[in-house]
Image (cartoon, rainbow over all chains, first blue to last red; front, side, top):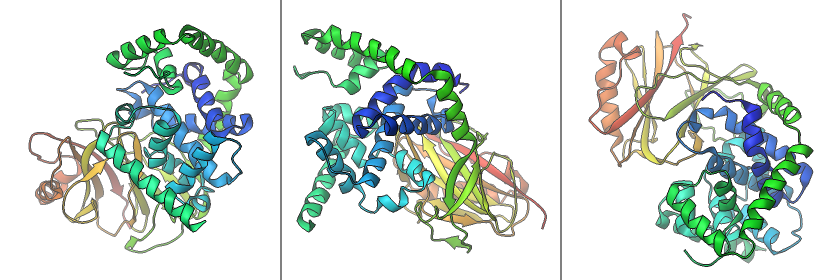
Length: 160
Length: 249
């Protein structure tokens, strides 16, 4: 798909930046993440031919930010951030080391991860049906992923 | 639809006009029920202008292009017939990647096979038809725009057929929409002459990988035709392929 990057950024950049700011709570880190979201999307522009890109951009931004939160290990400042950190750490406790690699970070970001699903439902307030539509899964599949993540979070709480 | 507040996530997509028709109608109705619904849309537009002013397009595009040109990644320097390298292990030595858009033989469908090569101290994303040599380590990945079932197999110039996904003959893997997924193992090219061709076979319905394998074996038996001809698959299957041309030793 031929893309005018500037026009693409003008249309979607603010949305992506808002998403990154909402999840990372840090304007500088959010701007940095936004650039990587566009780099990643442009790498796979061939997937943009038959769908509105906003969904793909938001999902990629969510995953990428979750991976960065997982590496940051900072103290949450409010309930939303606490929830985000729980989701990030419950999804893949081994990720911080791997996330130092940009490639690994990007490859991780490409999956509609369980963490992304949890953010959409638990933080953004999308219904299970809306989440399923966003990530291309069945509602039961989404429900199962959330159950697994909650079990994992409970295990982590028990350990700590 | 309940009377909950329209999630910002959906508001963003509504404002861009990218929600499916039915969802857009429901979102608009929901927004109309909110006392500040119209204001939320107005605020979003104001925020767009503000963010574009704070992050000017020309500067952002320059930075995006700079990151595209030199993406620093980490890859291993391991060798072996099959490298038990997970995506994480595949990232171990800092290298520069030359990013290029892959061109593929897209016979049907929108599935995309991606092939990366680690050779010496460099990693690159290969284009269809790239020259490869025995000993090159390649990492396969796939991108799928929607959820389907899939199998990845290869046929080489010696007529050998290899199943890469799923790892063992059985049910085809379930491919996730929006995912660029690396296969769990990197793969070292052997000395088979001529070519190495990878096929991504997909279907909306679950299928046995043996269907794709059998089609690949039949094609492999046709010698050099396996380099260019499609797999003879039953109706309902889609395929794309990616060929590496083997350089003479």
